[in-house]
Length: 123
Image 1 (cartoon, one colour):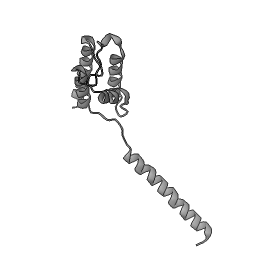
Image 2 (cartoon, rainbow, N blue to C red):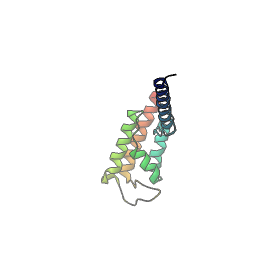
Image 3 (cartoon, rainbow, N blue to C red):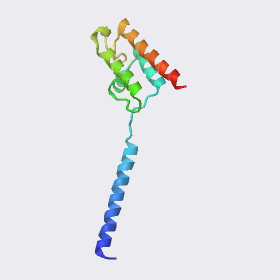
Image 4 (cartoon, rainbow, N blue to C red):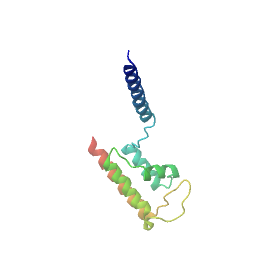
């Protein structure tokens, strides 16, 4: 083997190892948020009942649902509801991060209905 062949072989091995490392790293760290319709309904039911924790609220409101634009649109509507002071009665707590009034809860119920219609149309 010539020196050039050895250098090329070592280079190819290093490139292959680097690519493998990237692929394994991506596989391990894949944290794509993929809630199902029923999980989203449960989050909204918890919100309406005053049981939405800070972690649940942060994940649901902040993490884009990249795999389904319809579900992400509902998540955005949720954010519009929880960002509007007209829908809030105050009294935020660790177990109730939205503190919605009757108007806000009614709007959340409409989102739940929208999700149920989506779910029914998938069958």
